Amino acid sequence: MMVDPNGFDAVVIVTFDSDHGGPRYFKEVGHIMLLIQDQDGVWWITEFSGSKPRNAKVTTMKFTEYKYYSFYKNKKNRGVYFHRIYLVGDYTASLDLARSYADNQNYPKYNLFTNNCLHYVKTIMKASSCS
Image (spheres, helix red, strand yellow):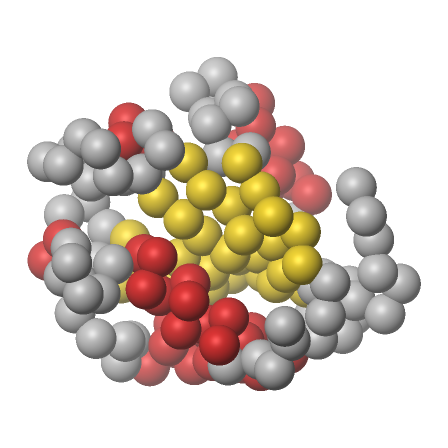
């Protein structure tokens, strides 16, 4: 894995398997979430999801090594969420926005075509000026 010693990196994580995060009512759709590293080297995971579209909300929390291994030990998740893109840059503004949405729960309601998990990740990524 490539590591930036200054931190602030981001990793986009994607699955195309609807049984692992994608809406069950629309089988061709997967799920996308984002890991963002803060200035202390701590990774945060953020996503826009729910058990049903009407329950979708933003979650942003620390993604510790323990949580990673607990997640990976679940056989259902192995190999599924590991389509990833590692981005080097300063994503501080993105993390700030993700934490704000999670704290205030003021991200717009879910819509499959205009406001889904991909739209959320794009919104968060655009908050930073990295290219």
